[in-house]
Amino acid sequence: MRGQSAPIVLVILMAAVIALGAGLMGYAASYSSMIRADSELRNFIQSEAIKTVLYYEYEDEDDLYIGVLRVDGTFGRYYYFTSSRDFREASSSGGIAADPSSIYIIVSEGSYVPLSVFNSRTIYLGFIDVSSSAPQLLHVSKSSCEVVVLLVRAGQNYYEVGRWYVYAS
Amino acid sequence: MQVKRAQSEVIGGAIAISIIFLTFMMLLGSVFNTTTSTNNALTTRSKFESEKILELRSLEVLYKGGVCYLRNRGPLNVTIVRIWSGGSYYSEAIDLSPGVDYSAGSINNAPEYVVTSRGNVIPLREECERIKRQYEVPQSGSPFVSENVLNPARVESEDACYIVTVTVSNKETTYSILYNGSEGWRYWPSAIQSCPQPILTQASQSPDADGNGVNELIVYDSKSGKAVGLKNDGSVNITFLNLVYIPPKTDVVNVYFKLVLKVSVSGQGNPHDILVNPKVVLTPVSGGEQVVTTASSARGGNADTLIIVGWAAFPAAAFEAFSSIINGGDYSLSIYLDIDMQPGNVDISEIRLEYLAVNGASLKWEPKPG
Image (cartoon, rainbow over the protein chains, first blue to last red):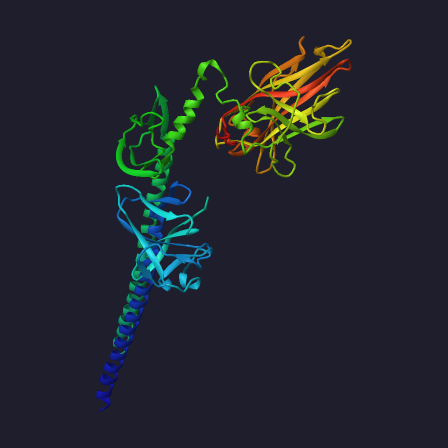
């Protein structure tokens, strides 16, 4: 009997070690996957912001035309909304309804916060497609807004990659 | 058994180290990929920005033979992708290889703006007009490329607004402007707080002192009904409020004027005893500093009418002292006369302004409908 107990204990111990090891490996894999996903999202937003160029193209008394282009010439779809400078009053720019908690804008510290912090109403987003052929024009009415925010979509959320302040003449 | 236990510890340790190493490597790889990807984007952006600046510096607007051109003087290929004209735009795809010109036609037909694929916006027509102005020879040999401001339609404009002051012995007195225009004699009191309406009056003065067919503005004392003169040293300031708009980036603003002073001489007096130093002053309507430039001084001649034709230039682009003030906007224009008179039997009986023209700026006083 004494001779049999040692192998049983060994098997139990080995099973425990294997289970613990597998659990630890799963946890580590899950954790690293989470970090990687977060890192990839940040990288994507950062890269999109770097690739996106906004420039002033034309304006008259009522309208402003902002040029949008991508430095690498690849295709990109941008979403945008117009709003008051404090983001409390967002105007309708298009027809894509978005929950403000899914829209992330950059605050002065450089970090992203959900728009719902400032505005709880549904935001209607416009969009423009920018291709390699030419810069696209973003047309906004100067009377209806003070700031235009350009976004990219990642998953179900929208992240700010550019902003333009509008000065009514 | 001791040997087996040692083996299991080694194996277990190796597995644990492998897991830690694997996890660490995965994270490290992820961070490395992120950094590389962001660095690539930054490199692309940096290259784009330097090319954009180079493109802007390479594009030169030319005006030759009445035609406006955009020349690519740089090493990069440039593509014009959009053309703005008359507040609307259309898309284009015009390639400008190095050294190639884009012909935009005459100034009137030239696009207001052309936009390149790198997002540079070139104000083509404005640049052409600026170049044209630099080389433009005044028509008919006259340096006066502006109309005379002092014509009935402008003098009697609803926008007309004057301030006239005469200073003698540090005492400043405000007067009016008298003019014989389309409705006969009227005078415009000085604008103290707001611009007063002109008032019909009867006047015995000659409307045209030098008899050349052009009526003059006369410095007028509405209380006494007489023209204002000077018997001693003094200064006269005639200000045309909110008269001109000077566009941004204006090279030079020129002001031409013609003054007519009636001189009374008696006894041992001599018209030579009068020395007039004119100055022209531009004052921003929005407030702030003035700019002053002097014109040639004039001394009285033999006749009883002293005529001073002067010209003052404000070289805005060339001198920082001017460019910091003449940087676009609405301005009031003043003709300031510093008059020295030697003691004697000579005085100025009437101060008149016949001609005032401005180039490098546009007139804001809308002509009275005629």
